[in-house]
Every structure is written in structure tokens, then in C-alpha cells.
Length: 54
Image (cartoon, rainbow, N blue to C red; front, side, top):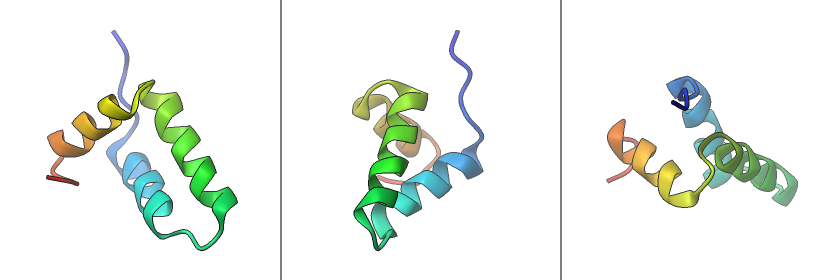
């Protein structure tokens, strides 16, 4: 069973993905999220589960 990363870390990556001013930071945040969850769908499911997105 895959262990989920800490919620605060995922929130940080997500906020960075949305709000970073430079492309490299956004790409790094996206890589970290995909690395942790393997798919964009899994990232979205986690964010919904923790009420970060609707």
C-alpha cells in the first residue's frame, strides 16, 4: 500500500504550482505531486479528499 505524503507538504506543492512566479518552480511542484501520486487523477482525488479543491 502506498503511503500518502503529509498534507502540509501536498498543500505547499499545490500552492506553489498555482502561485509560483517562475516556470521552473511550477514545474518542480508538478513533478513532486506526480512523483508522489503517479497520476494527475490521483493528485486531484487527494486534493478533493482533503477539501483543498472541489
